[in-house]
Length: 90
Image (tube, rainbow, N blue to C red; front, side):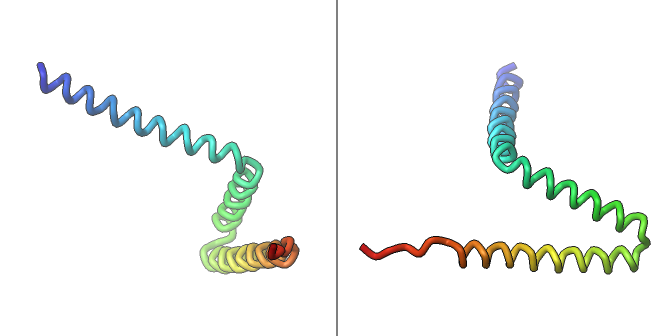
């Protein structure tokens, strides 16, 4: 009987840890909800196009999409660095 109680306590501890991780993930997702929804929408659209386009055309489209996304991210990062205020030395 003691072993069953110990096992139940261990499972309850595991569930509490998972609950904390899920709650932290949910709060993080709420902070980035617009970006997250946009990324999910783009992913679903790209997956649907790839599914219906055929394997070779789908692979080319996926490569092109990844390439363009990488360029866009790098361009945005460059613009942020370019337009960031310059720290002053005091």
